[in-house]
Image 1 (cartoon, helix red, strand yellow):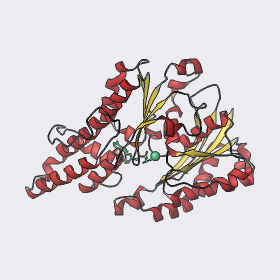
Image 2 (cartoon, helix red, strand yellow):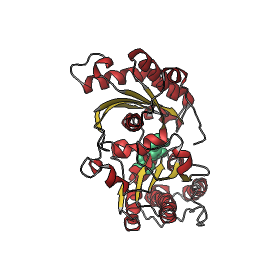
Image 3 (cartoon, helix red, strand yellow):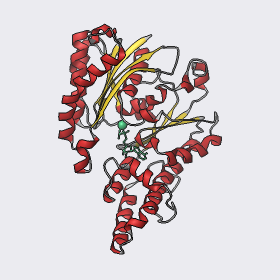
Image 4 (cartoon, protein in one colour):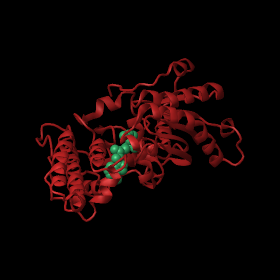
Length: 370
Ligand code: KG4
Ligand code: ZN
């Protein structure tokens, strides 16, 4: 068994976790997880303020390390006592100052405790959230030969910063360094899906991040009340565009407010907006499943918590060779360090640890090309 410490500070969640990897299984166990969401600090500004994010990570990260140490073991007084096999840290992409806090912390721990360091791409971590505390991948059903039946798998990473579609031909633990770059078949040309939720929620005066507020207020609303645009409909691209939805929403909102109908129309507006975003995601995901003859599908990232999206995507089950759709547990959809540690566990299986020299030189990368 291997024990991995994960650190995540790429945006506004500061998170530290310890996971256990039984190695023969694809179901990774969370031994401890402590997350501080900065949402309340950014709410007055309607979005993440990078300088506030990095300063707060600096204040939080050591406290979170103490928390996971306490909950991982009653006997351990120091991280050293946990006999860690690796430290995994998100070093790309994200807010540069925020990333730097996690990377510097991980480098210092790795150097002082003499534990190998593993640098993780944030979107690889989101894909690995599938394998965190997921009984669907326990040793009985999750052995390698069974799991190979799932390939090619379409992994849709739908978050506040990304709407990316990946076709995976290999299992975790077999991925090469650049697999995200090679396997990406579609992405957003402008705003991400989560960003579209957040920006429109802000126009309605909902707190940041707005996705869950739109979902909540959509209940009982008519999803057909307002025909917000579904962009890039043509089947020759798997890319998304969400900026038109935001513009159209703001014009509609202006009209309704002028007519003094806003209060009554909120459920209809939210349901129609949610439907437009979900519909756009559904169409391209369905097209990718058919173009690449995917045998299974995984939906990950913060927006994957949306139940309407989960329902629509579930309609694709009979189009998949293996007929399986996977969602991470809701707790692991938004940014957390358990998924980073999970990605680290799979990299460790491959022996992909950094040398001492590489560890000391490791930098944070705000916007890698992948
Ligand atoms: O993955 P994540 O925590 O952060 C990024 O890596 O971006 O995703 C955050 C995004 C936000 O845009 C938030 O509004 C959205 O996920 N989100 C939702 C829901 N819960 C979170 N969007 C729609 N419905 C939800 N229930
Ligand atoms: Zn994320």
